[in-house]
Length: 109
Image (tube, rainbow, N blue to C red; front, top):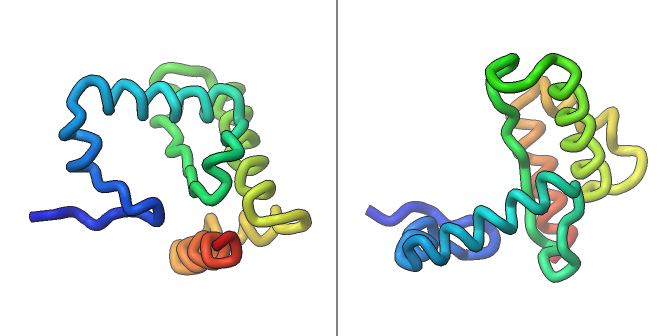
């Protein structure tokens, strides 16, 4: 059974078909985005949502706050200025969150 592709039309099966080379390249790219908080310009229509780790598993509470700030900054950049309060409201409402991301993607295309 094929899985649905994202907005980039790249399926998990395609990345898996590249085996270690493809998985390594994608992992490296996503780690660079996560560490720097910067999305490369050629991926400007890319929607990247970092999923936080389970609290306290590897890091203290302070680093979780920084991680959350990084996510919020990235989403505010993606969705535009003045949208942070909308993002916070959306986090509490899964349907609103999904709609905001879909609308941001549509506006970028």
